[in-house]
Length: 240
Ligand SMILES: Nc1ncnc2c1ncn2[C@@H]1O[C@H](COP(=O)(O)OP(=O)(O)O)[C@@H](O)[C@H]1O
Ligand SMILES: [Mg+2]
Image: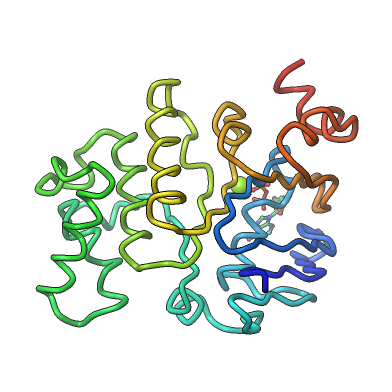
């Protein structure tokens, strides 16, 4: 049984069809990449899956249960986590406190949440940041911390939206290593939206390509990279 089934999902914003009959499945334990040009509908699709948008039509099934019309909080509780950008509101939280926000999804005890947050920070090699204010640590570290918050919710599956955007190659390698650890080391199924080809093609077992709201290709990184439709719609501008 697949962990995630996206079945003919369509999302309209007024007259704009941001997602058009998109279908795919993700098996438990997979690491799947989602690529495509700006405006292709990738983030919208994650919002639909995570319950932040109501889909216009179609169905989403997670872990054997239909989640199409559940609200975001219920979906997160079922074990489908996503990262958020660091907002100004996190300015008065330490890294430890911020990661505890994730842990509080599974416990009401402050002590347990702190233990969990410390464990996750250590597991991801971020423990040195624990006492620092989120707003004051470098942006690359903030990105890793947002992943730690999501991991602290104990997800079965993690949706990552452009966590490597704006990072230099060395920082991208670090993100890559952390995602690998979350996937292989912690056994969390991962789906990642990414423009940094060195990252997404390097770690994805399977890649799905969107263009103008439609799924135009799906396959191994090698298959997708030599697909003429993908090269025309997207990779041409990246590799060409
Ligand atoms: N909340 C929204 N309201 C109206 N249009 C939106 C909204 N979110 C996204 N869109 C539009 O939907 C299309 C897909 O956007 P998005 O999912 O952000 O693409 P991607 O993440 O692939 O760059 C774009 O044309 C974008 O302008
Ligand atoms: Mg996006």
